[in-house]
Amino acid sequence: MLEGGGIVVALSGGADSRALLHALIKICGEGTPVMCAHVNHMLRGAEADRDEEFCRSICNAEGIPLRVLRVDVAQIARREGKGFEEAARDVRYAFFHRILEENAEFKKIATAHTASDNGETVLFNLMRGGGIKGLCGIPPVRDRIIRPLIYVTREEILDYCRENSLEYVTDSTNADTAYSRNYIRAEIMPRLDKLYGNAADAISRASRNLRRDSDYLETEAERVFGQLYAGHLPTRELRALHPAVLARVVALAYGKITEKKAESVHLDGVCNMLYKKEEPFSLYLPDDVVCRCERGKLFFEKAEEKADTAYRTELSVGENILPSGAILLVLPAEEAKNIQKSQNVYNLSIFARVSGDTIEKGIFARSRENGDSYRFGNMTRKLKKLLCDRGIPLWEREVLPVVCDKEGILWVPGFGVRDGAAGKDSEKDYIIYYIKAQTA
Image (cartoon, rainbow, N blue to C red; front, side):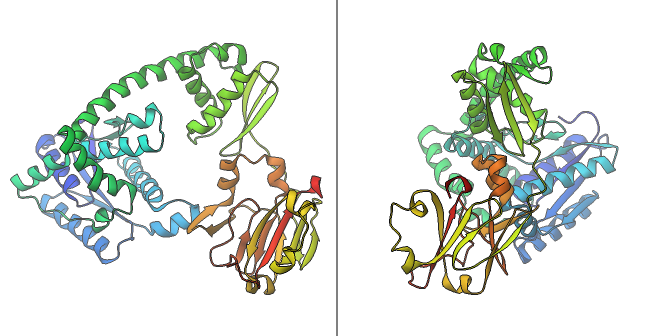
């Protein structure tokens, strides 16, 4: 791991990264330059500032250069429709790689992931129904990222810190078991240790074995892909492949179109359609990618969305006809009760219950716009991602109305009402029905 040039240590100030820095200084000596990088995510107020100052003091004492990034991760997460953890991880690794690009003598990034972290990750992925890739856990080496402590447990880290009188800081959010990973760390892993001894070590052995098998399957898929791919894949040859290899070949073809990683649910969808032998077919995948199968060939291509469908229509109580021919029917809740079930509004519509105060202040419908996002279910979500994940065809996205008020997006048919604007089963509520054009 340590050959080839200088090392940038991801230093949080916690016990793991403190032990990693101490060990690397001893191992590398003067032959390999070491630099530290710290990210203040600005999520924990004074505690985050304390961690930053602690890292500065450690690096000053050791005579090691330190790069610090202060960034409002919460703001980024809201803007990009990501969870805090995902947004923080993306920011960190982008920062680490930027340091490598700006400092030619530094070749690798060392993170302080341990066997305990790996065990928690494997269990987390297992409970999400992850495939072999997820059960491989955290790789010891990935591209320019190295994890020298990946086979060392958290208990061994703490022992090392005590033996070497190493001070470190503690992140108070690690004790919050409302987070799934913290719950696994605090509740599940100790019980597994009680049953089986060192659970983290056992999981590390299992993930090593799985990683070996996964590496073989990846190599085989790359070989097959190299033989078959010519801008498309022949379906006859695809159907002859083992399912484990087929899924990986499909993932490689998807990766030719986008940098986004294909998830198992999308790969399974393509593979299942291939096995049905019902051609032609098309599937809409994340990042505006279309998988199209026709005349014995499987294609992946970027979908082209039409740009001439922009509109804005003020909505009033009653029937509102949109440019697409679809209808938005806005009715007081009490009046909506009187609609006969035989009518299209019940049989063929999507509807939402909205507070009367919101409706009375004025609402309108418009076409989608770049960057659309809104908050419902206590999460801010990007509309584009919601539509992709739901697999809604492009033609339907082009005509899907976005219902708004002066504060922004209020409701999109098929998804939730904006937080704070939903009706509360009051007689003052309104019901908005969306009836598609072909059923109007």
